Structures are given as C-alpha cells and as structure tokens.
Image (cartoon, rainbow over all chains, first blue to last red; front, side, top):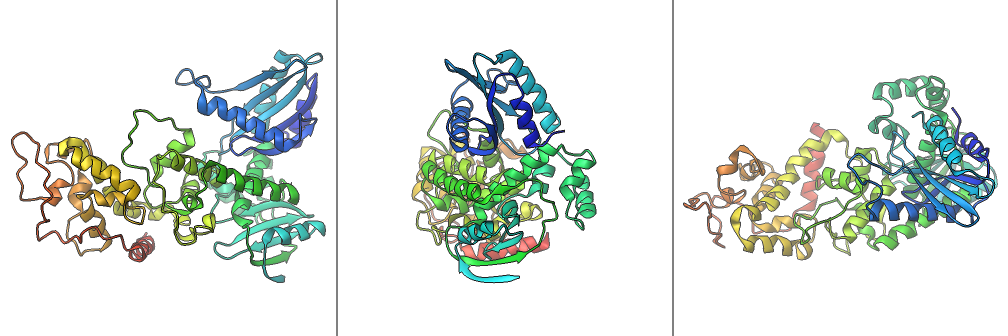
Length: 125
Length: 387
C-alpha cells in the first residue's frame, strides 16, 4: 500500500520511464511529480488537464456506449510515449497518472499493464 | 499565540515558510479559515466554504460515517486520525494522501484571500488528522493564484460564486451537453445553495463546483446574478451563511423555493400559450434584481410571497406546489393558474384563455415586488433553528 511518492517511484521503475506525475485534471493541479517532465510540473498538469478536457468534454470517444468510460490516453511522439491514465477514486477527485516513456527503451503494452496494477495498489481498487 | 494586525495572508504565510514554522495560521473571520504548517510547509487547510477530508470520504461513500467518527474519536488526542485509518485498513496511504492534498488546495483557495484580513498564528498547534501530506508554500500560493485566474478566464463574474445556483427554467436550445459534476449541481440546485454550499452537500471539491457553475453561467444554463451586487469583488468570501447551511435545513428551504420554480416551468407547458412562455424567457435576463426572477412569471408569484410571509397568504402557495408535472392532479387546470383564477372554468377544450385580468381580491400577493431579502434570510434562520 504505497503512498504517492512510493507509487511514483514504482512508476519510474517501469522500463523506459523518463518521468511520472499525478495530476488533478479537473483543476490542472500537479499533486506530485518525479523524474523528467516535458517542461515543468505546472505545464505538465495544465497540459494533462487540457487534453483530458478535450476528450471528456468535447468528443464522443470517452463513452461510446452507456457503461463505457475513459481509461487512458496515449500520445505518441517520434521519441516517446506520453501515457495519461485515469486513477479512479471513491472520493471526489479527478486524477490521472502521467508517465513519459522513452520510445526506444520502453514497451507500451508492458507499461500500461504495470500502471493498471499500480493504480489498484494506490487507491485500493 | 501571536496576534497580527490585518495583513495579506500570503505574505504572512511566506514569512512562516521562511522560518520553517509549525502551527496553525488563522486567517480572516468572515468566514474564518485555518492553514496548518509543519516545518514551513502546509499540511492541512480548512474553510467553511470547502468540504473537509471527512465529508469527502463519507459523502463520497469511501468510508461509513461510523468508521470516520470512531477514527476521529480515537485518533484526535494524539493527532493521528489519518494514520489510524490507514493502519486499520480502511484507507490506503495513497488515498489518504491524495484526498488531503486535494483538500489543501481546495480550502486554501478560499482561505488565501487577496486582501488584508486579520491574521493570527498559533505556534505548535498540530491538526488532529496528522500531517499526512505537505505542500510547499510557494507551490500553494502560485497554484491558488493560477486557480483565481482560471476562473476569470472561464467567466469574469465573481458574483456567480457567492449567489445561489438557479437553473434557467427554459432553454432556447434543442440540446445541451453537461459534465457529470454540472449535472449534479443542476439536479441539487434548490434556489438557496451557492456553489460552495452545493459542494459541501455533494462532497465535491468546492473549487471544482465554482468552475462548473461559472461554465454553466457562461453557457446560459444557470441564472446570471446582477453584476453589481454588494461585495461582488469579494466573490467567494461572501456566502458564509448560505454555504454553512446544514443539510437538516434543506427540506424547509426546498418548500420555500421550489414551487416557484416548478410553477414557472409548468405554467407555459400545458397550453397556457406562447404569451406566458415568452414572459418567462424574458423575465430571466431582465427580471427583478435578485435570483428569483421566475417569480415574474405570474402564477408562481403568490407561492413565493405567500410562503415567505409566513401565514399571511393563506394557502395561496399550496395548489401550485401540488401541480407538479405528472402528479395525480394532471386533469386540473394547468399549474398555478388554478391559484390565480379560482373563479374561471377550465373550459370545454381544456384551454383556459390567459387573461391579464386583475387578481381576485382574495389573492393578497402584491404586484411582484422584489423579494425582501432580509425577510427571506430571517425565515431561513428560523427554519434552520427548527430543524
């Protein structure tokens, strides 16, 4: 049952991880970051919030069927992957985990599976 | 205990961070807020305008009220309610930390007001929850300022934050799109609660409710308060009374307000004709100074004033309160018209003609005077006292 720091350390142990953070995407607030971020942690949080808003407020993709809901977003650049994964909580919080993955060293499928397991440990799901 | 004359709270906070102080910083009195520091970082924040850790965890359904109360009783003397919940397996460490972090940012928004207020520091006063998370002061101050700007970018109308949320009764659109939180705000809006009052009732972060309410106002889905209301500049600092309403007082508040809304929504629908419909729509933006604009829609008026004035208007309000769409009274003449024109027959076609006739003498309602705000407030406190 790790706390936030331990959780981020685990995320950084995923092969190819460059940086990780937890962001409140409802408000765009960084709640914890570690390793590298594309700019700084505030820019990271603001960017994650905007991307999440674009997907959840605007488009039809996040809930294509009635019981559907958004799980993660993957942004692929030429040098890396940016994973934004929702952390479901049973209290009011709109949280995502951000993971920056090196494209050469990282494996997207492995990273997603690891994050899924980690998220369960973090909030007891 | 160190007393300070009025000061801008963020300056005092920065000074405390520089000296790595530990203790409680009491800020302002209307409403009062507290920041707890350990080693110069903020470990807890509380404001009557934002739900606390206990409210978030219990209203959200994560913990039962009993578990929370037992933990508070057992953990308060040693200031370790939070760690106790983790040790006993009720919460994971991560959940507790994330919840507390959220509360720190949320409450601080309301505590760190951008003006000089009375500030008092109480050294070595730990919080009963325990220090489970810490936010460095520069990050907290910067984030609070950013949040303030972000609200302005959505809609530069601070008075929306401190005014009861009133959904507009009629839309000139076929389709709208709401976020989950916007839906909750609309559904629970009772014409009395401000965005922060709704946040505490729903167990939702208060700042998030401010954001969503401003978005709703910007989209014309909730009523826009008049721009130059008293204290508009103070914004979030105003609604101490409204926000603090305990849920016990809710039902009474409902009966005062809801019939007016329902009546307004109802009356145009079953054939009262376009005249009434237009009346409602126009009353909304232009209407009387306060939030109760739908009162202007005629039939609903007696309900409002009758209820507010206590027993003065005997039973004037009741009929339309029953006239909810789909109620057993569906066959009766439409909604509030029953109250407004008791002598009129519904007519064979079921389409009573709307006449701008003078009200029957028995109907004591004054011609849509602006609601007496002081009276409404007194009435609410009285009802509150009864609950």
